[in-house]
Image (cartoon, one colour):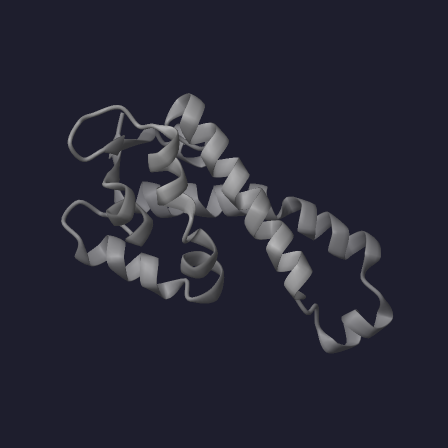
Length: 131
């Protein structure tokens, strides 16, 4: 299940980052090409917002993102109760810090936790399971 979860994450991140990829190809200047593409704060904020909305909306309606649905995974509450809006916000409120600033932390959390929970899952009392 861990491999499925990591591959699902990479699929979702590619979907979330695709507008940035298009933007960088269409609007990258010679200076950016010479120095490498620099992710500015405003772009990072936009990407984080898109990611938050992408995951939150899908988990609200389907309990899973596109990547998770491809691998038949879903997000559930650890106590078996229904996933609600507050749980979804709690689960994703720290995504910016978890995935964009220090991405190794959620990977380690999932690996060392018996319920495969990252920080957002712990906060929301959720976990990802096979459906």
